[in-house]
Image (cartoon, rainbow, N blue to C red; front, side, top):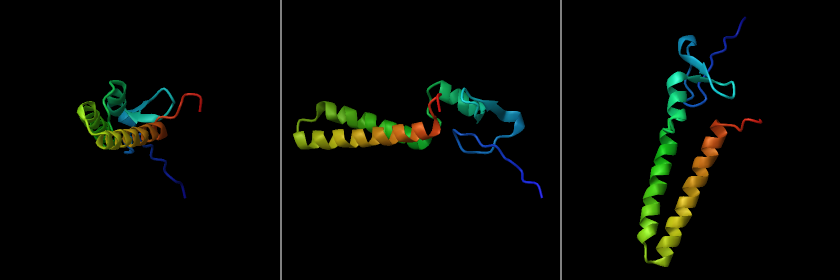
Length: 98
């Protein structure tokens, strides 16, 4: 019995057909549209985009916050969101020397 390998896009985790397959700088298969969006610095992942938008909202709030406790809470949430975003990006985009 033969098994069939179905390649998936590492950006969106969806199957890639031969017609829509491209290869990124790491030699991994991607959809051309996903890769173009990534190169254009548009975030193809809605979870990361949401976290980044929330972090920017918190930055704006922190910029004008007068209460030290509220400011600290904003800064802690910003840090947590950015760490989660970086971890998710790093897990999807390994360094070139790996």
